Length: 112
Length: 112
Image (cartoon, rainbow over all chains, first blue to last red; front, side, top):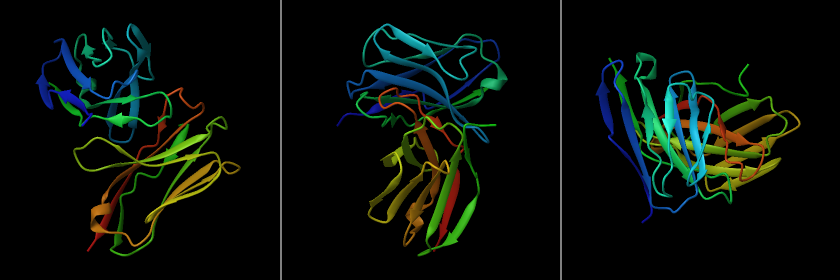
């Protein structure tokens, strides 16, 4: 069955370190998204991609970057982790025909 | 002011009750409306998808959209303990544009 996976599921890091969160989907979807979920804010869009080599900034992109070298993967990099980036991160993908997005299980990131 | 407002709850009701969950929005361009269900420590999963105004029913769930009032609702009939989850509304303006705006989510508990 097609799926979307995220790794690691839990991560603890220190302020200033670079961190990369992986997202892999086997749906063969062109569109992929990264969100963060925080209490009181719901899901907020960080970055998104409509296809290979395409990346776009979302609502809360400062301090984050993505690259899309193939259809299946959209890794999210925190260039210099800050405590404000402690959150749960969700990756999602969609086929572009509708707005239905399929979400991964999430990565819980703690920045100390 | 947020584009999409959703009462975060928490909401606690007895098993068998009818549950009403609501979102209001400010952007009149929104035409596609979704409800996602999110169990604890899981990713959101699509529950209902509707276009423009009107009702859509799927088993015990009914989604209602009133574009004139910029108000959407999700009704759950004969609620079950397995319905206990966080429910997020989401919406977008252009099909395929893929940029969803989410409400904060309402945490619902169904008590046996």
